[in-house]
Length: 506
Image (cartoon, rainbow, N blue to C red; front, side, top):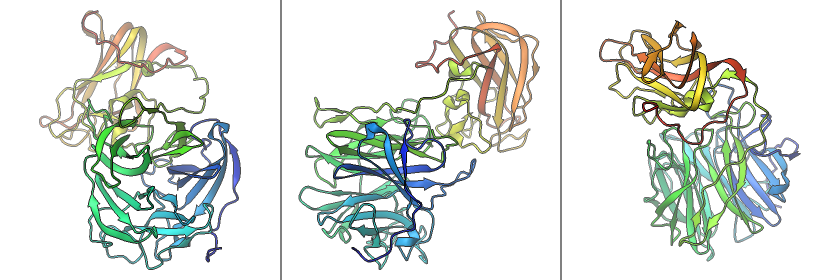
């Protein structure tokens, strides 16, 4: 057995998952999955999110392990407290156990590539990549390079990037390659066959459209594939409409260090702003592990690992990854509600800036500390005087109220930033836009739902029109949620698959 004591672990537990995410009850949040096959077992190395609700920060003190003999059985062994950075790397600070990967070497040992914060470093960014080694996936682990990290802002050469998210490929010929990077900076490098020592210099990797972070390299039928979190954003993007969210994009190469060619999107944005995934073949089937915010109490910093089958299109060359349709644990029957906004499609007067997401208007989520993509907004440095948002239903609906929750980072009356509007009103479509009758309410204070009641109307389209704060220039308007109320509660209709037709011709 390799020297070194095992990390202090919480007792493993056997879990029968009900679906995705694998651990869905909110007792333990898993993140940044890195799947690994060893013999008859599929393992998933994960981080652990421990941020409190509404805390927008990565609080990640440890790595965890999930293991199964058959994903279809939904039976998993969960090992919390699997590895803590400070227990393995004497030179590392505790916490910040970011995305790592375990790889089996040609010598039969397992190598863990871990991004941790280097203690006593004077680098501008102290994240560095260390390597631990063990004779079993389950450990015990020891530092394979006790002198310190193998990659940092100073090693093997000076670089100015944040050195996280390592992914490693042991090629068929025994050569070893490592990729890493974030914030749009991707690096690649060969390692010696000892799995530790850099061989040659690091390279800037280009050609992967919209690369942001979370590279994952693997090989299939002689072709090298690189999966990554992409955030090329815009209304016509095949990846994401909002820059804070990411898709899982992919590219191919004919050699392990490229050049790479962008090929498309494997997984559209999920419920968490970050997206991190790994792909692996297990017993003749391919799987993708990724994380979402779908567990009980989940959020952007309280993420949980999911797993789904991945299919290939071998009719093209190189073989293409078919877009993944995420599955989810069965949801409870919706509670009847007067709010029918979720059955509408949303539109707005402005080309929505990429930091916002119009889909947040009627997603049913209101947060005390929202991120920009959790709202619709207009701020772009040249804000309109009277913007509007609009709901469109497939069929006419009868409504008699609405509630809006505004977001603001500037006080009322401000002409810059995002401020509460000076006023707002509702209009419905009836052979032209008409104001609702007998409106009462229409408050503008942020941080709480502002209600308005009006005489019932039957329509297919409703518009909220805002008078922006200021006298020119104008502040931006931000709306976190917009509810529309029917006279009587009903079971919520499913969200529309496609946008409803605009009003104007009916």
